[in-house]
Structures are given as structure tokens and as C-alpha cells.
Image 1 (cartoon, helix red, strand yellow):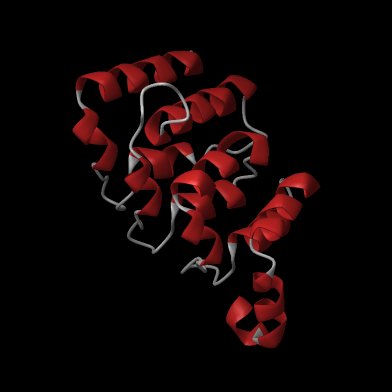
Image 2: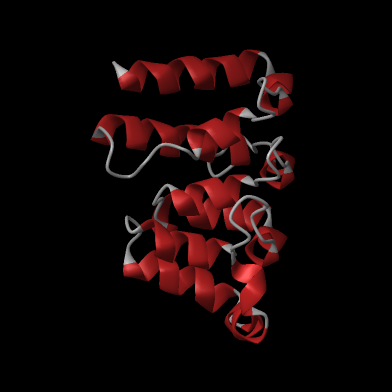
Length: 153
């Protein structure tokens, strides 16, 4: 059943590519919504979300729409923030989103005031390898976090 959702989204993207930047009442794009799928949820739903994220950002042969990875929602959250908080893995969504929006690693989430690596670590559902990878991509953030601890939320 959840796999049908990805088929529907992928078909909608093919027919109406402008929908990638459409927003709901919370300012979320389809990418934001896909990034909220928790790793521990029904396995098919997580895999469907990864498929949609790949199609949106062009990890497949279609080219994708990488600009959507740099869009903030109404709460000032980037898709990478939501993916890190949701426990998405580096070999899935995190690396694809990073490739589309590398500066997102250095952007604090406006709700938690944490960097993506800290959000992944604090969420308790991310793998250690994903937290390590996020930190390895921007190691200077660890020093900044220690130098300005009041900004970490």
C-alpha cells in the first residue's frame, strides 16, 4: 500500500515537474514531507520515501530538482534537518540531500538550534555511521559547538 504512494508521487513528478516546489500550509515541499519518514516506521514506507527523495533530487537518471533541498519550511527547517532528525541513513537520503545542498550541513535548525550531526545524534534512531558521516563532512562544526554552547539549544 505505501509503495503505491511512491509510484503516484513519481508519476506526478513526471507529469507536473513544477509540483516539486509546491508547499503545504506549513511551507513544506514534497521533499520536506518525504524526509519526515522515520527509519523505524513500516519498512516499505521508509523505502518509498527514499525513492521519492532520490527522484526529487536527481539520484536517478531523470535529473531531478536539487534546488528544493535548499528550501526552508515555515519553521525555518531544511530537508536535511528533517532527514537527520528522522534517522535517515547516509547511504540513503542524507548523502543525496547533502549533494544537492552541501551548505545545509553548516546551517543550524531554527527550531532546535542544532546542526544536522547533532540532530541525528540527539534523535536516538540514527546509526552511529550516519552521525559520524555528517560530522566528518563538516568537522569544524564540532569546535563551533563547543566554543558557543549556548547556541546549541
